[in-house]
Length: 129
Image (cartoon, rainbow, N blue to C red; front, side, top):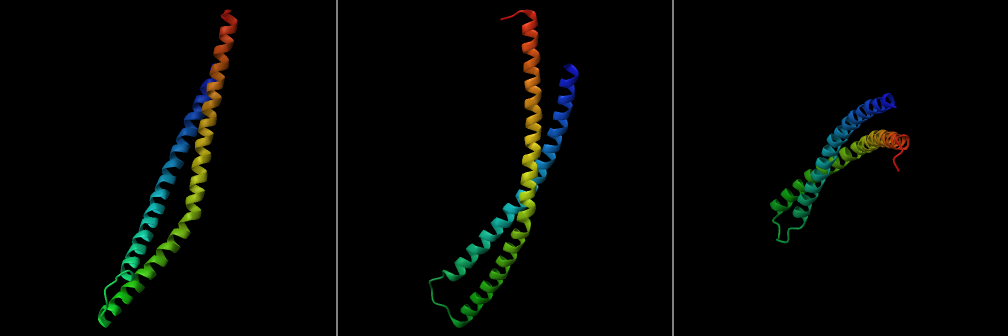
């Protein structure tokens, strides 16, 4: 039994290392996705500000506002496309991290179960109630 416990402890360490690696990878992916979403929100707010002005425009101001709005709209579309390209990899990284973490937890639970069985076996053999 001790050899089995040691083997499971080794497997758990390996599973935890792999899970940690995948969780770090996912965290990096998440930071990029969050930054992209913040950029999209910022550009949206800037567009809203441009179009939400309630004061009258001169022709020069209207041209400038249209120029800025066009620039922000193109940047917004580009940022949305970038986010769309990131999302499949993000989801795959999330699933992989969850799977690796689940494996580590399963090995830990298996090791705990084995330890409990060993304790019960010892108690039964020693005659303890």
